Each structure stands twice: as C-alpha cells, then as structure tokens.
Length: 231
Image 1 (tube, rainbow, N blue to C red):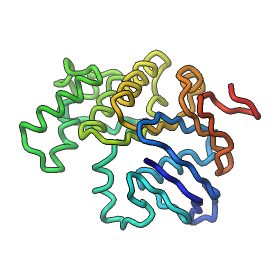
Image 2: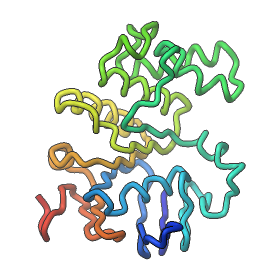
Image 3: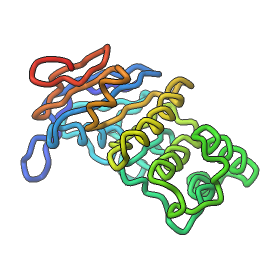
Image 4: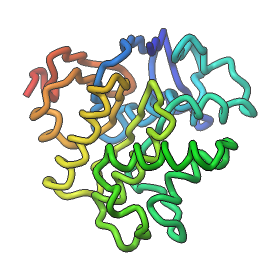
C-alpha cells in the first residue's frame, strides 16, 4: 500500500512543487497520474521511487517511510519495486536478455535463477524470440517492453511508470499498455504518469489529476479531469 500524508516538496529555489497532498493507493490498483507540465505529477512520481525526498509529511510504501531512509539505503528499497522511464535507459552494448539479466546480476543471483527469471519476464512482455537482439535492432515499443521486463524481473509489488509511452506512436503505446495491464492483473500495483489523454480516457482506471502542486481530482472510475469536468 502507498500512503502519502500531508506531503509538501519545496526545492532549493523556493519553488513549491507539492503543497500538502494526501493520497492512498491500495495494493493491486492501477492509477494514472496526470496534469500539465509543472503541475507536480513528476515530483509525486519521484517521491515514490525516492529520487526526491519530501520536505514535509510522510511517504509510506509497503510499510516503509521513504522520508526517513538514508540515501545510502535507497538502493535496497529500489530492489523491491520496478521503475520504467520514457527513454528506456537500456544499455546499448547488451542484448535484450543481457539488459534484463543485468538487474539480477548486480544483486548476486545465481546463473540458473537469472536464466529462469529473465526468460519468464521476456515471455510476459512478448519478446522471448528477440532476446538476443541489441536495442538498436528493436523498435521503440520493443525497447520499452524490454525495459518493462527488466523492471518486473524480480516480481515487484509496485511498478512505477514515468511517461512510458511518451516517445511512442498511438498503436505502439497501446501494445505497451496491454503489457502493463497484464502485469497489473497478476497482482502488481501500477502507478503511471502520463500526458496521453487518449490512453487515460480509453482504459478508465483511477486517475489523479495534479495542478499547481495539489490533487484537484481523484477520479475513481477514471477519465482525464479538465476545466471542471471529467472527459
């Protein structure tokens, strides 16, 4: 469970990115985080994977208060979650298989466990047949699915997706969304920041709309909130 309580985030330039927000997300939910640039959604997402620390309030994920863990222990927390970014962040000199395996190798997993987990993960995202290809041999959508496979290879309870379809065309975006929805159906909580109004309105999942550092709408039934109405 995610519980954000009375959280504010003030940067060194005195800009207040978040202003006393409180949000609870239950295990197994799929939640969109939307809003215009500068609305606060990116800061909210960064708090969840502890790229940023709240100035005030508490951010609790799976009973761990992220505002209290020291920086040198953040990597241990991140082993329990998965994070996917807009720009894939794949290592260009490694194959799809090796990119996913790398996440396990740095944790000291044995070779047989790595082989099994990587193949399971690539199969889930539909890329088992392309595991020997390098990123530059894959389409943008395929690269993003490799990034998702890497993020879920340890079967995290939480997957954070920060604009995962931002660089993709609508058809490819839909294929990536189908993968994320399947991961969610298998029990993983998914929190996804996006600018894509079409995706939000098509899938109708819970949607948090940010504006000026606060949550102006929490649409339980989904839909993009704009100008005092849910589209």
